[in-house]
Image (cartoon, rainbow, N blue to C red):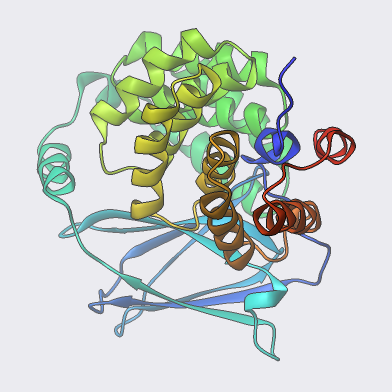
Length: 337
């Protein structure tokens, strides 16, 4: 049985958990300044998101945010959607508990083409979703903003009862189930969404994640490949496909997609650096593994697994200095969940 030097980190990689701390404030500005851009903040590891609009100078802020990793989404009719991972944790906060970020808005060719298509296309299915179902969907998001997951789920279930063709509601039910660790239930919700719209990016990439979590790596590969085909410039899609190839033993392909994910969003919550470090350590490329883990620590210093990473780094640096692999006992210890 092969020992994984970083197995615990990889298993936990998609759900970075921060150390306990008080609520923080996230302040940001959009460059170039975009007035009234929609700005959303979604937790990477628990059912929560909130939203606001930017002001005349492209500034925005979120108050009373629990420490952790988040996906920040900026949408503007002209520029389309932009995504970036942000760490709202004590190490990045000032003395007033504020985390400051700058979002540089730009579009790839794929994003421009996708935005043009979305701006001029509305499906009959979307038009058929009832006003009452959409109201329930809005109420669900208001519940999530108040950390009321049970209430959010109740509203979403009402939405799909009223309009069973409501793809976004099915997808959000699946996302909540996934973040609650209910992976089989998440799969069922994502399948409902995909039965309605097989090329909907959210359910496709989320189904890939659910199947990976269920250990069905070969089945997940098709969804994760399709997600990258739909959005080649999406960090999550590339990172998941890289992780999928890693689980299937295709290290060259894994490195390709994980490096792409890093290039798009270096601080992404899926932690591509951790999987890359595992691959490099197996290949005997200790210096490369060390660089990846140092990058991970720099971007996620308040993660609960930072301490484990530092221990792993120490072993790797000892190995690099002595030219000898980590001893069997320390490797076994690193593989403990």
